[in-house]
Image 1 (cartoon, rainbow, N blue to C red):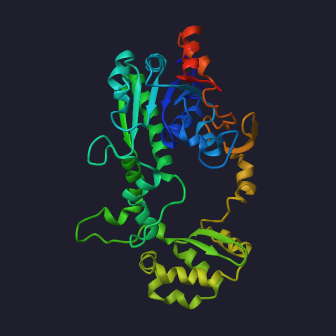
Image 2: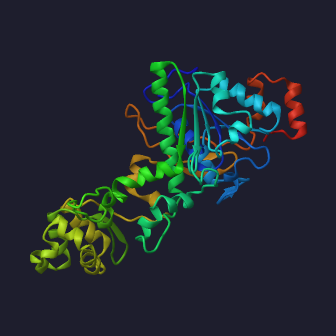
Image 3: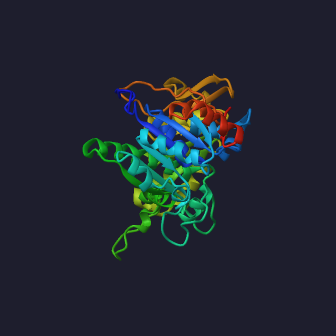
Length: 400
């Protein structure tokens, strides 16, 4: 650690080496970068991280890649070549953290297993992220976000168990990424006390099962016969379609319900036992939803929001992906950063969501081109000009 941490950059000086493809470790490392860490991303020579080519892109770099790799340096080197292995070992000696999301055993096969790297640097925190964990019949299977959504029960929750449906974004990848970032900071804190690093295993399956459980499996947590089972809280959440848009609302409390009945002109339902209490409304969610949605279709969003705000009902207009960037609250807080990079031109990305010391932070930085920093990093690691030239000529090292 060379830089001195500060209140707004608590991970300044932390050196991270990332060997990964796709989202989990990439986003974890970028999260740590936004808090001050320095990140070197080690990529394959041919094509680099496959995420570079997925989705909307410019000059060979996708928006998805940029959104998970801002502020990093890229070293593109063949890890099956002896100098590629040696380069990673030298990086590990200098690093605080090494991240990988390869299948179990791959790093050991490359000669870069946790025991090997930690023998070179006992203070090293080595993190291995897998899809299905290191044991069991699925340990060696490929894992993608929607596959983990399926096995972790998320598709059942979304579709209602009888009809399975995906969350339409890479939720499991991102949940695992943030779980990984939290684990790294916990290990750095432990090392501050003990002086020693450690090995950490994280599986996408476990991270996402734990993420879903508190509310998604609330009705599967208590097993005794006298437990009173209710639907998950999220099933009471409503998207209410008005005549000119929609409102997201959570109508839970009695005075919330009374406001709704007045708004839709159904005051007679105040004496209906199906809707008399929070519990009874939970147990009759279908009828409850019908009253809400059928009664408000003719109302404008502004009318609905005015009534909801007066009753302090948790609610907000639903934004589309085309309109959310113009939302006044998002604009006022400066949650999105629009800036220009040489490779991708004008773009918009979210600012880091944590304010340390109450200070707005920024990660308005470019994502690296494949191998953009290869020569620079190899030189820093002590490889000679002739060695670097030999690797470039043989195609074992790539540079932008």
